[in-house]
Image 1 (spheres, rainbow, N blue to C red):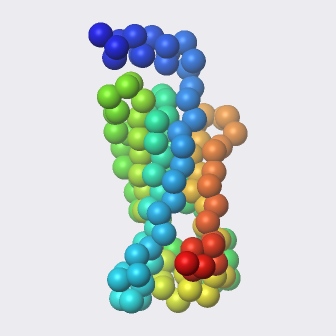
Image 2: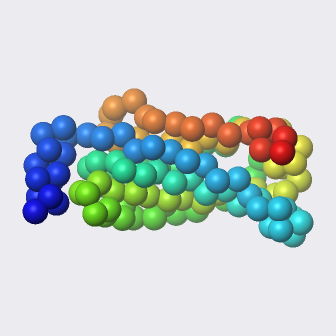
Amino acid sequence: NSFSWNTKILQKLGRVEPALTVLPPSRSELAQGKATLMCLANKGFPSDWSVSWKVSGAGVSAVDHRPSPALPLKDGLYSWSVGLTLTAQQWREGAVAVSCEARQGSQSPVSHTLSALQCSQD
């Protein structure tokens, strides 16, 4: 069965960096004065990656939600997700740069940065 075959390969590799995707807040949520971003880390190995937000900007009060536990995928890899809530004003003003970071042990982290300005040009 392919699952155990994949698991053997993964154990040999020891570490697979997850791909990070950041989902911007929805228009309807911004209309309510909130901006929730989601960071999805997909297809990483092993299960002990930690995913978190780094926020920089003037006077930012951001709520970093607890990351989800590692979700096992069919192929022996794992996925994680973590949310971040800002005010719609902070997001719109574009004064906030957020980056989602996945790290495992002492290795250098994988990160994905997003600013409101990148998202508002649609």
